[in-house]
Length: 207
Image (cartoon, rainbow, N blue to C red; front, top):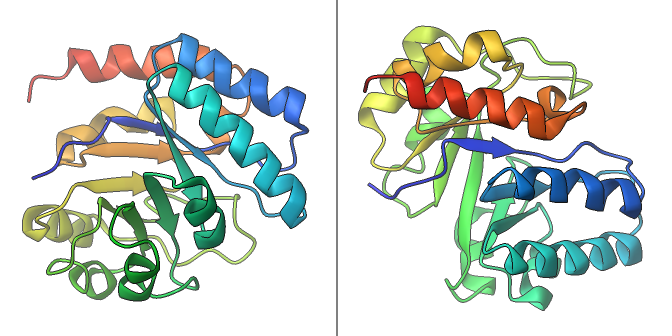
């Protein structure tokens, strides 16, 4: 099975670039190696400009920037990583457009959705929401613990937990078998401090 960083922060929406840069650099300075730029409110020009700058910043830290949703931006930047949701272009079409050079993570919300990727080649399978989340206006139903365990046990790819994760719930998710935890809300304030605390928790676990 491919390896993935155990902590996977996702950027908050609607930050101007100065604040966005500060958010990224604070995490990178703390040692974060896998970060996603997620933005739903910016126009295409600003989204591309921000992605290009963040791509260069992450490269300078030898870290990975994951582009969210935008196959076109990933293509133009020759990005190595892309995340797609259930309403984006289908996996195989996305892979074909990017000539299989880009590693693609996928969102899933049920066992059936997750299983549909078992015989494909995603970088990871994100499963959620694990807990109630306020990030999305119309979130999917919470994925049951039974389903979480079934996906983790059967998936040939790393499974990433997402949705409503906090400092107090992260440990049990790693212990349950998730390869990584990904979150937005928990990293909105003092992201470097939160990352440091999560990393301490992760290091304390006996796998």
